[in-house]
Length: 246
Figure 1: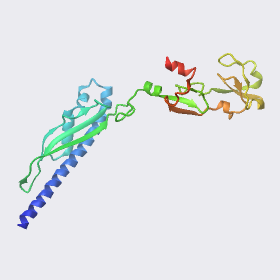
Figure 2: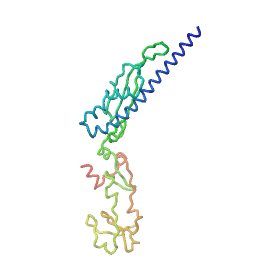
Figure 3: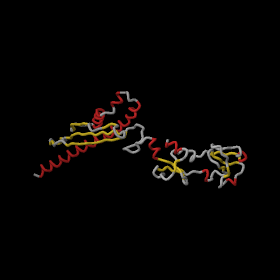
Figure 4: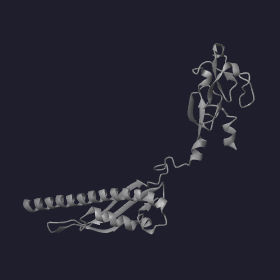
């Protein structure tokens, strides 16, 4: 009695090994195929009129590639990819494979085992976002992010705004009487460093002060990117804030 039981146990272990080996092969084939199709998506983006390229993003193409990569599939039946989707959500290539395995070992046949396996990769389209993250366009991102300075009372929607990205140039102090800023105003000595000015001073195109040192706090801006909610208590910049609102 012991020998038949032992024999049955060994056949069960052997069949389990066959099933697992089949699942591993299909899992690897699914991953490789989904990655290849994700790469093909780049070509489709640039040559969508080519029927050969378009055919590489289909369940028929996926089935052929997976079965070819998996190798021995004699114990596998009823393979289908009907649950798969291609760039329908978040540009994902989502291969879902269902199949049945009926391992035959030592002349003992067991009922078919049903399997579902999946390979999911984001298509290489060049667009931002993965799994729903960062799928907003650049205008939405800009609207949600604003820029503030350390002691400022306004927020900026453009990080290149000249109020925070100063255009600094060095001029002779003797020529200050003839120079005007973009508003037509004169330049006056900075309250921090203007008294130490020598032959050369530093001015900005939209400022009203001249400086003797580039290290002066009047010429430096500590800029941070924050959410619009964090800057809710600040006023919009008179230069870039109004442009964004319009």
